[in-house]
Amino acid sequence: MIGIVYVGLKPWARDNVAGSGKSWAGRGDVQEVSENQAKMLLKYPDQWGLENPEDADRLGGPVTVSVIDPTTGEKTEVAQSSLAKPLEKMSKAELAAFGAKMKLSLAPTLSKKQMIDAIEEAEKGPEPLQPGVAP
Image (cartoon, rainbow, N blue to C red):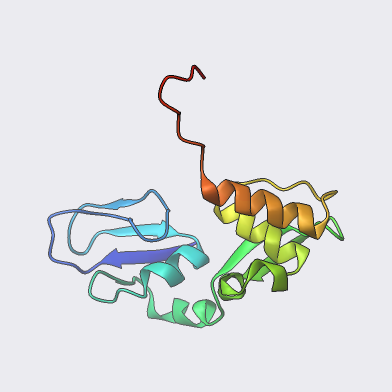
């Protein structure tokens, strides 16, 4: 865990960037977050800073997403930046990570095409109700 100090000017702050669920009780308050969450929060130096400058060495790598690799069944870290490319160019592990960011669990037995289809369907969202048609 990494200590993050609030350096902004508001009387309190809530993490609306990294999804940690943490709140700070004003300037100088410190909360601990994961390394990935710290990397995201520190992109806003006018709001958050490191409590311990020595932790900067731990934050040198890219922001990652933890997933179970569908091909090996092992836990792996996928760089978040690799999730910006077209779905067709992603590996199955990257597709699983992309789905996880959407809170979509993709079974490892799915083919790559089935994973892409499931993601595209989830991105559409629920179908709107048609007037006069009962659900």
